[in-house]
Amino acid sequence: MTLPDRLGTLEIAKQTSNISLDELPVELILEILSYLSPTRGFFVDENVEQARQNENELILKSLHALTVSCRRLYNVVQPILCKTFILPRNNVKAPQQLVRTFIERPISRKSLEYIEIYNMNAYASFPEGFEQEASKDVSLDDILAQVENVWQPRFHTGRMAKETWMRQLVRSYGESILTSIVLLIALAPNLLDFAIMERSISSDYPATTLALKKYHNDRSGLRNLWIKQCPSRAPALESSFQKYVFTKCVRASRLPVSGCLWLGNVHDATPSPSLFHQAYALPEIFGVEEMTLDSCELSSLELDALLKSYTNLRRFTCRWGIHDDRVRPREIDLRALNKSLSRHAESLESLVLDTLDSGWMVTMDQHIPTIGSLRHYTALTYIHVSSLVLFDDNIDAGNEEVPLCGLLPPFLEEIVIQSEWDEDLEENLLFLVEHCQEMLPHLKIVDCSWRPAHNSPNTFLLLGLFDGAGVRFKIDSSNLPPVRER
Figure 1 (cartoon, rainbow, N blue to C red):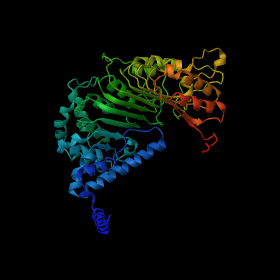
Figure 2: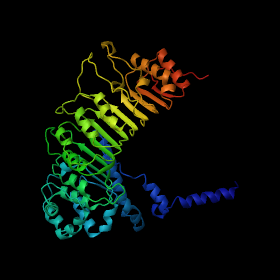
Figure 3: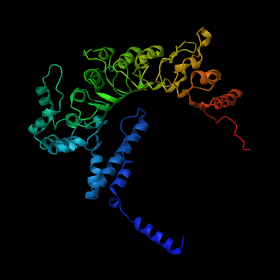
Figure 4: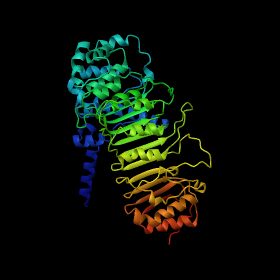
């Protein structure tokens, strides 16, 4: 490149470096904004959850700052910002203000896709004059006129008629943040995802609204629903949002959730077994694809009742253990869980079972039956389990041991085993690698990296055997000697 060419390139670089964000093409701005998307849903770990909330708050503030910078960026960013409503921690008027916008400009309600409620305790009291100011924004007649058209034809709220239920709800607008949230749910035709952390919510209005509102999307319902039980909530309290979701959303609506149903900190007191079995004389045709029970203590009967409510489940995750002294740890019956999951043997693709944090107390010599054979799961390709699920540590008690290959599904591609590295694990892995090409021809990855591998002959033997079988064997090699370069 000649000197004039270099100088010309440098001049172009100087000119482009001064381009402001609002001067970029819309396509490039949208690409940049795709990285400013709030994370939807909850995490059980409080530190991770707090980090998520802080990041989401920063993202929404950044998007709002862009909307007030210039008209062009407002037109680009505002539709993205309106997709998400997360109840602010420092703005008690936000839900009422958004309801007012929805009533005055009906077209704006089409943007809302995600509602998240996680801080209801912060609104136990309101600023002086708040109720009167909020109620003046929109008249009750205006709200009623638009809310009347958002319910499904088959409206059912028990003994209360539709008009009575609706008028009672709307009249409390401006007096209750929960009421405004319910109105947001009702008025958002394209609502896809909903997340709520239950703290002091005992009303059935949110669940009833989710189940009975009209959805203007292909799924005719929610895509994802996250419900996180507050750990500090008394387990025996029956009036809970989870109860109403199960009895009115899950059981009363034909297709309330089509993507993922996530339940955090769920235990046997809410909902009780009788609530699971309440009959609504509806066929079991619910289409949820993924169910996650994160930090749970449910009995085998409760798990069975929950899994029986769905067909064609594709992904199931269950992590036992709630860090709350008032929640009684439940016995883990893996054989019963296998029987319950067998209803989905032809559709289940992913299975995650984590027993490591369970509070179930067992003796060292107690026999704990494993999950048993998974050979009849014809679609299952991914398994992530703790060793208790697959291995019986008490073989000496006369229990019959089945080689690992005889338990795993025939089309398995990846298995992750969380286990201490010991002789039992090595022995099971030797059985696995010996027969995997014959019984598991699709196996690609075996991950045993949860704990460091022992510096033993069997470890190096396994590395060679899996490599020879064309299977990637992932281990934590921190205890192994470094590989010398030739």
